[in-house]
Image (tube, rainbow, N blue to C red; front, side, top):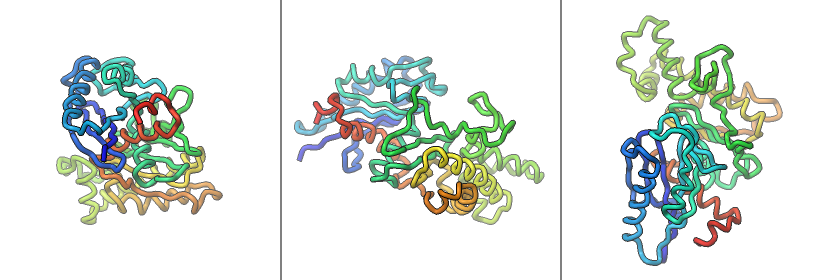
Length: 325
């Protein structure tokens, strides 16, 4: 039986993961490119095209690659561009979707990585068949995506849904966006480690910090009963619970999906978070919004999400895609 595939690209500041993704979640023909090797976006697109050419030679003549999906930091879905991506080797606004389409002849859909995570949950994960949900990515930063009434929230510039840049502590920690006290500086994995370091210093234990490189190390200490490690999760849950309750005011979701590295702490985070979240919810929302973790395998979630961009476009009566079906 012939296969139908999407070329999925998880584009980051240091590397890009490539793969073919089938509608059944199968992932094949993996490849990794180092973005720093490509000084111009055109060179990167040429490498993608070469990879696709080699992949097509390995497929059956009846198999088809029907589109390219790209998830990237600072990706703009409305324009198909990377907009001033701070950690990429290419400056300014890069029309990546157009470059890929022109080089490969395939339709290309590009979006920011948080929205891509949401499309993956929508198509394959915890939010299947749901019309109202939020996805929060707790990684280096705090990414977010809002699906309302069955549609992704984009706004007139394509930049809507930046929950990470809601101010939750006026005059608080400086944020790379130029403001102070943003949720990202308290609730992301980076913010979590800041909190842990501050508490360790207050307790006179700063000499021990050399043993704690990331949230996983703090998680291990918390499971062993370390009081400061546990307090770090409690404080983070306080800030994150308030942030999520505020998000509900805007979109009245049925579900909030947590993903990213910090979400890997599981019950250590979820148990205090659930209590704080419910406490801060509007009365009419209480008991009507669930919190859960991503149902997608961590290393493949971004690829599945990037493929979902294309699968979802097929279902939106887009003639650009239908010619490939």
